[in-house]
Amino acid sequence: MTGPLCALLLGAVLGLLPDDELVREFRRYYDDDKTPVQRREAVLNLGEVDSLAATEVLVEVLEDEEEYLVRRAAIDVLSGYRTEASAQYLLDGVLFDRKKSRDEALVAATAEALGGMRAGFALEPLVGLLEHREFEVRMGAIRGLGRLGDAGACAPLSTVVTGGEAEDAEVMAALSALESIGDAPAAETALLAGLAHPSKAVRLEAIRVARELRPKSVVRPLIMMMGEDPDPRVAEDAFEVLRAITLRKFEDDMTQWLAWWDRNEKSFVMPDLEAVAAALKQLAEEGTRYAAGAKSFQDIQTKSENIVFVIDVSQSMSEPFGDPERLKRSGREYSSLQRLEIVKEELVNTIESLPETTNFNIIAYATDVDLWKKKSARASVLNRSNAVKWVGDLKPRGGDAAGFRARMGVDRGASDEGRTNTHLALMTAFGEDIDDRGNNAFVTKITDDVDTIFFLTDGEPTVGKSVDMVEIRQEVARVNEYRGVQLHVIYVGAYGGDDFRQLAEQNGGVFVSIGG
Image (cartoon, rainbow, N blue to C red; front, side, top):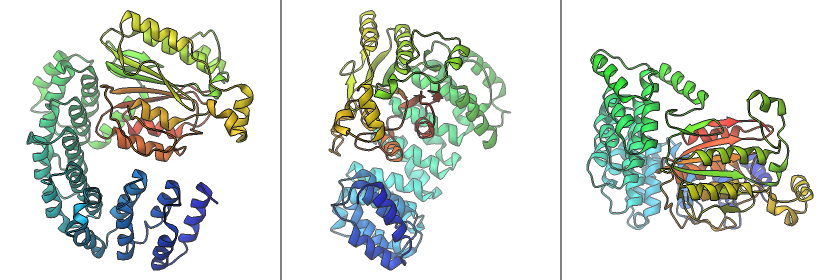
């Protein structure tokens, strides 16, 4: 027996065992013959043990660098442990061990887990790792300090941001760690430095953290960024955060905002968290972004100049839209009620309206992916015309019989062409060059300056490296952690969509369901 059923049964059995016996059973079960899903499930079953024996076996899991999600599960399980003996073992048995401390990946994972354990004696060793020669270890230490939640980490984390020597990813991780600690006054200097950072990705992260920590000192810099930042996506995010944290509903006019702030800065009191949360919810429900000069696709607006459109062309996209009356009420008219034809017409309208300053690409996916261009192209007259023709030629993959067999779970070889490979589509959109049929390595980082993805689908994944939306969302979180890409999801399925709503929300995007 293999697959999810086996993992489920394993969880039920292990949950009935005493702690020591459960660890012994884990050792007997966990080996290379098990799939990554089975190994991850076994690791998660150690979550309630919190013993030295379980800590030791999870360190062995961390030494296996083959599967990111399995190691991620081990870090998270260890982070939930609270016994001093477990934390001390990570310190003495890994970080201070002459042999194990040479394994940079193990040290990085251990540092993050140790912080998650909230062991106060870990503060000084983790701060010391900020000076490590290896980038991966420094990143693990930064994450660990964020998880530790000790205000004593704020000063060294702020130095990472303001020192001028750290890599962009380290600066973003330090800002995120300061957010986790939650001491706004202690993070203020770092936050202001992040808002002025030369890296677009860092500025986007600083804007996001400003939304959470809300020190009064960020209002003026955000106003200036809204009007003067050279990147439209940064200006867009600054405007949205300004609206949320001040509860003011001015338009995107820097002069108006400055005039208001000059009059009210001294007396203004930042709104409480509950009011800000309500404002953010309202902005999300509006589903529009930075209206002035914005492009729009399926009613989601953006001022981004670096966009990728990802379109599902699986066999199910040949089915008709399920609610014609709803389409009539929207005021739109289409030449066909087929899902893909409706999407194509909307996308063509969007492409034709793109200004020449926009760089864009289009990805069509079913079992495999097709790219309009190898990398993003400027929206010139010729490129827009070529893209419109390319979109117009798109057809659902797989025939009717093949699609029926795929839905029934039979004759897989005949129906593979029209299945839904969500994982491959998303990784391609992020620029990750992978072999989705078995290679776990992400060998090529993104070369385009993509900061906005529109992802359109009508249903859950059915083929690919993973068909588990929890795992897929974790993979997206990993590759997007230090990129700041905004991922909007347009869902045209007949029912469901909660997984894709979470995907959008976890990546700063808008979720729109237009029904199937």
